[in-house]
Picture 1: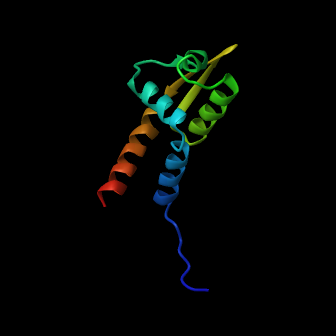
Picture 2 (picture 1 turned 90 degrees about the vertical axis):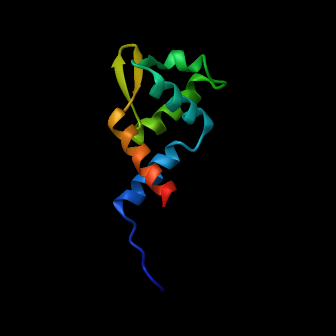
Picture 3 (picture 1 turned 30 degrees about the vertical axis):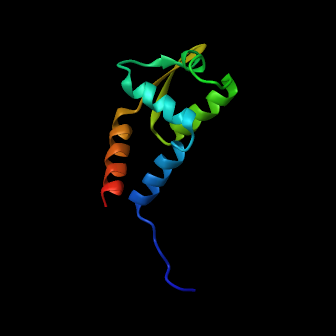
Length: 100
């Protein structure tokens, strides 16, 4: 049936990053973490957002699954940081997409 398109790895990566950034709470989290020189606890983030802990956990999970953030467990707490390597990769890929 028609032309079969094979998506590139780059297209899949852009889509994964875009999906992870598809909610304003996630954009807020990324903005906050990208401006920090260190990690922060999820409890600190929940105080800044109009969502509960369970909602925050879901948003953090999406960002972590996309590789944009990373978590470090220090029982009973989890500290989150921006994943600098993937954050830079996302910026480059999205910049290239928007400049085309």
